[in-house]
Amino acid sequence: MTIQTKALLVHFLTATGAVFAMLAMLAAVDLNWSMMFVWLVVAFFVDGIDGPLARRYDTQTNAPIFDGVLLDLIIDYLTYVFVPAFALFKSGLLPGWTGWFAIIVITFTSAMYFADNRMKTKDYSFSGFPGCWNMLILVMFALKPDFWVIVALVAVLSAAMFFPVRFVHPVRTQRWRTVTLPMAIAWTLFAGWAAWVNFDPASWAHYGLMITSIYLLGAGAAQQIMYGKDG
Figure 1 (cartoon, rainbow, N blue to C red):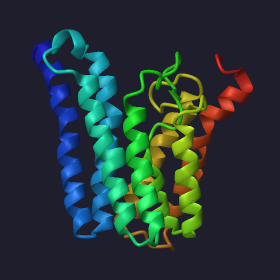
Figure 2 (figure 1 turned 120 degrees about the vertical axis):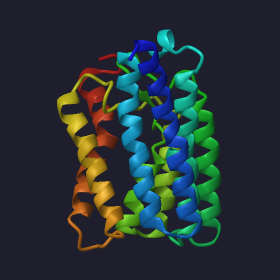
Figure 3 (figure 1 turned 90 degrees about the vertical axis):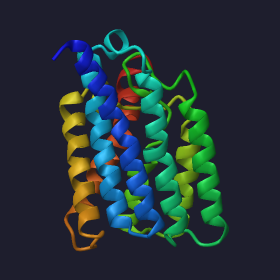
């Protein structure tokens, strides 16, 4: 198999995320939340491996007919933002106007953030909250906090997209990667587990989700405090 073929197959792998997004959306329309999140976790896993493969086989050089960055952003918007926002709106976790507030704020701010050329820092971290609503909303489904907690998190994280607060990329941010990457893998496993057992509150997956989510949300800011904004 030529390297050009391998590079093309990486694009095909990335594009499967669109299929998983559609399967997740169909499950969401049926209010089958556990299956929806299973498909979103599968898409999250694909998103985690296609980038390293794209760099390994240099898709920009060996399969330039497709724009891998654009393809990835389209699928990320579907799986990180659009489907999870719909699920939050239909879940019953946010009554009345709060559901409309969340779905409008999440989709609008995320669209602007995904088009922002300043979203990546020199160390390949994210500048601002990277729109990982799939992760946040899955945790909300698992923990079912008071609706004011969810509204506050949506407001704060939407604003945080446009402030110079750093969030680590689990694969590309080199500093603490020996901890961050296993944490991201653990989050994926805990998320799949929680969804598979239909967010049973007795599941130990909930504790794993809380620990890994807190780390992934706070690691970038901790690095800024410890090493400075350019560190």
